[in-house]
Image 1 (tube, one colour):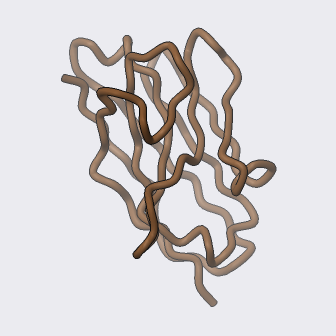
Image 2 (cartoon, one colour; image 1 turned 90 degrees about the vertical axis):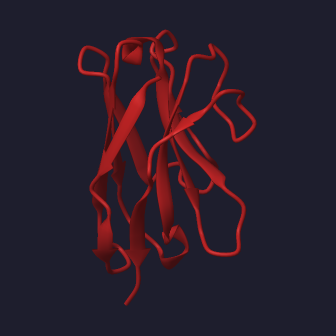
Length: 124
């Protein structure tokens, strides 16, 4: 099964930026589309952004659209999430996720593979 390694989390002030990265590895890594979810304490897991390699263009959850930008390198099986204009409500554990599905990625996507998560804290 594909393995996911996340990096880039940290503690920042409102308005600051962070860049998260996810690298997929394993024999079947190239067959997985990659994306990001987040979960804040006491809240349900929320879709953030994802990229289907065949689709090409990234897509975003409504709460981050216009502030976050997802890019990918298919040859390296990696994606990076550039997070700008961060707000306290962005505070959450961010999880990289992988799926072989050709459909858009959601919390209900079957057979999602999850990374370990990385903490993002936005506080003054």
